[in-house]
Image 1 (spheres, rainbow over the protein chains, first blue to last red):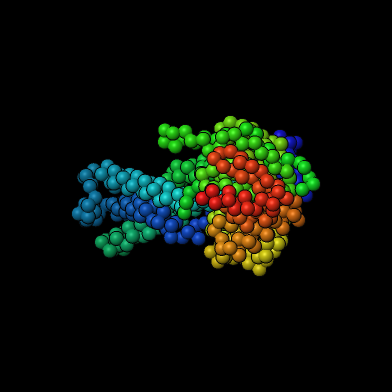
Image 2: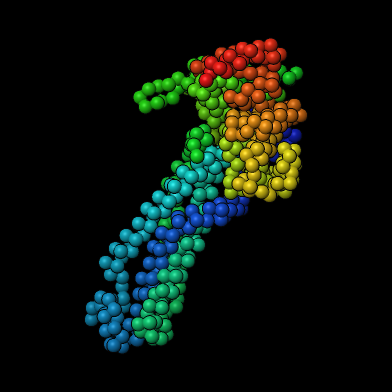
Length: 232
Length: 249
């Protein structure tokens, strides 16, 4: 780097230390976790819309899995009961697909959730202008800031959507158990249900990262002097 | 003061801001040289361009025209990485509002710049504790910022500014949010550091207490340098300074 030849070395150790600005990955994880813990309620608000949307997704997916299990028994009585409980089953259907109406509601709920995350994260970035500016004054690069926000969102996404998926899935099971009794549990394909819960968690993580992208870029591109100017 | 190396050189710097449709000229051509190891105060009323000049010297802002050299390096020529390196290793910042990162302890605040500079955790912690002891906070390094008083937070900020043995410390109104006594303590701490470590201290301020310890005072007025006074001239013209400050407000 051209610096090394131009700058005089003043500190005793300057020559020994690599002339690059770095932030080790584990250190960023450390800072991100600390930041979430200290701002627990702010993180909770950011995450809550994700929890709700993912639990809804998980609820419908696991519900379909249970319904499929019930259908696979081939008993007409269970089939009638399913139709009575709201599943649109035509005579030739052998499995419960997600109806267009249901898919539409799921997509809408996820969309609302992303908008909610963007909104909450933009607020969080504004609240942290000074912190970001200070870090930049201490030598942080744009990508350190970006990485911190992405890590925070990733961790929030994983915990939030994990919790949401499990709660939604459990709720679906309880719901079917109350209506149909033990047969709903015994006929259920647990792998399918597990995949549904896992899939919902994954979708939640992706949404959390998508939602934080724009706010994190706003934060990372900020000039240190702009950050310092903000009155708090 | 015997070291005549120019750590900061500002030549023909102007800076204009857009205020709606109006172009406001905050700096109207400033030339300034600062010798290494000095304690410099930049004085001037609010709106005089003092903060703008200060940000320019700190590499926080780029001039519209003219050049700013830090250690003979034109900062306009630096890319983002080199600027970050400069902020990390060459310059220490102290702010009016302390700007201690709230989620970290005092020690973590002090070690953060060292981590950026690539220092190992253990070495950074050891040096951080030493620095905190030096500013008189040896027993409080595990405290969070909200458990510290304003003066203590500013001491943490000073320790943090010294983390990578910078050549320059930039202090923007360091006593602005502190009471009289605490402010005085901070000023003397800065002066002591400048003497012991040979750090150049550049401070933008309204605070007349600063004049006592400054080697040089730069008066800014209306986007230009009004005059530069050295320490020996200062004591003679104290009456004049009083008048100047009266004018400023």
